Image (cartoon, rainbow, N blue to C red; front, top):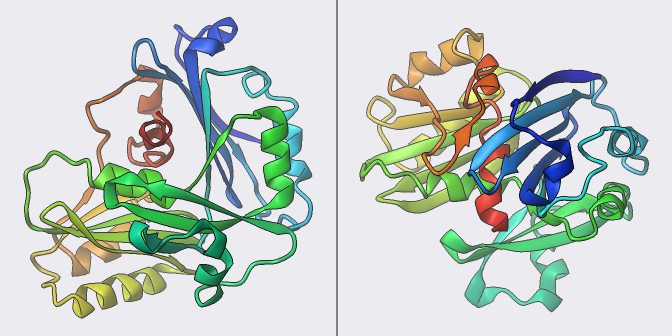
Length: 284
């Protein structure tokens, strides 16, 4: 089921060899964006909603049916990137990373099944590697459609974006990117990453517990901490209202000035799919 589709009038389906395609896959569904690399302008944003969120880990026919039917996903692109949203991951500093020891790094942090493969990539801004599992069926579907696709954990565009902020603010900041059943959180100080983690949550209290506990452990003062939100949250939601009760200095993330965006994107809040729209710098 198509959740939304925003297409700029400059989009030319026969010129995709000039475009970059970013795709995000999660249990929420599939979202993709198209960037015109000659103009540095995002010209398409489209989402398919997975209403049941109960995909068998060994079967990914739902994704494959979209890959084989969507007119934009049937095209070839100048470059393609996939963000796979996954709570399980581990970060390994570059001096300690050895590709042949990937299984050893993950052993203490998470388990993965025979239906999954381990992937890894480097987050250059923190000189650190992220290791994460991806379902084999999902990978085979995307690689069959896009043989040169670059595969990323959601931490890559998230961390890259928050460390690229040009605020000049040396204060401590907490960043949260929210999905329907999990969220990722990062803490920065003076432009340096202090912490990154992912947590599953079922309700507002869960999200508040993890967030306030991290602020407390880092000895931050909640009343003076800057909190920046992105993802599946709106200003009218009870989640936002409850967060504001505890952390007054709360704001929504804003797109950077490297790219421009089609006016059609104004139909949704700019922060909703900011992680997807921040993927291209990781690929290029």
